Image (cartoon, rainbow, N blue to C red):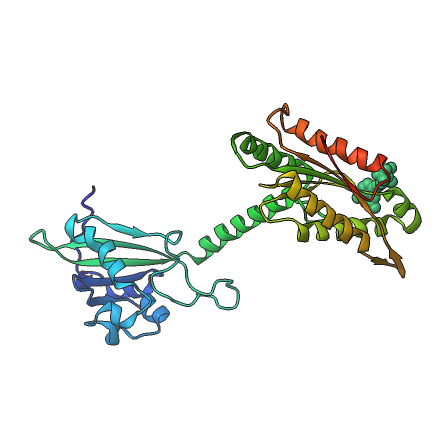
Amino acid sequence: MSNAGALIDSSYVPAGLLDSIEVGIAVLDRNFNVQVWNKFLENHGAKKAESIIGNSLFSHFPEIEERWLRTKVDPVFNLKSPVFIIWEQRPYLFKFDCNRPVTCAADFMYQNVTMFPIVDQNGHVERFCMLVYDVTEQALGKLGMEHLNEELKTASRVDGLTGLFNRRYWQERFDEMHKLCVRREKPSTALMLDIDHFKRINDTYGHQAGDKVIKMLAALIKRCVRETDLAGRYGGEEFAIILNDSSVEDAKAVAERIRQLAQRLIVEHDGESITFTVSLGLAQFSSDFKGAMAWLECADQALYQAKENGRNQYRIYV
Ligand SMILES: Nc1nc2c(ncn2[C@@H]2O[C@H](COP(=O)(O)OP(=O)(O)OP(=O)(O)O)[C@@H](O)[C@H]2O)c(=O)[nH]1
């Protein structure tokens, strides 16, 4: 632990320096009574130094949690070591407005705060100095970058037309789910779904109408599955869903609901009312399957049977 104490007295520091520097500088005693309060703090706190000096910091700034700050400052007195508060931990100590209200996107000033002991001639610490740095630009830059990264991550996982997971990400998640299924008691069921005679829809009404059908069907699927299920656009007009913790009996109800709702759905496009049907294949997880893809292929086989059998129905892999 470093003894980074300082032998300073505000009377040694030229007043011009304290007041022209773009950093908040305060000196406080053990009871958090303010002894020095520079112009930066005066301006941003919108309080005159005269009204603050001699008073408890907490009486002027109710946003500061007294117990927390006292505990935080303990090492300054007990170990004579500096203490830091960074904006990532706590965005601010003082709820000051943002410096540039017109151009600044933040509601308040992000701050880094350093507190270090002032060691007197006898080697005792009865006071400490607090430095408050405005790090709003730095914080907004970092937060903006994080937000952008988050958006890019989402965009790379999601299919643009439907908002469902794209095939690549769905496959990744499916592999993870498959591994969990191997170790779990509860069964899960894979469901493959394909729009019937979709080529005809495209040929009759055009590709844009086809896209609209895909989009509306995806929205319908989202409404029929749980948040814990894994729904993705697997191919052009093909969807793959893992119904988590659902036996094939439970999955039958979901498949039938999707089938019926799809049959009743009317997609309006360019004055035309488009109706369509879907076929579905179900396969409950079995430890006999050799890997995740083998499981999905079974659902796909059931889907093929549904198509063979006349479409607009679900079939179960047995
Ligand atoms: N509009 C649109 N069409 C797509 C998209 N992706 C694939 N398709 C079309 O979907 C059609 C799929 O046709 P097929 O695989 O022959 O199957 P189908 O006509 O649905 O017939 P069945 O599956 O046997 O009932 C093809 O014409 C593709 O061009 C897409 O994103 N948008």
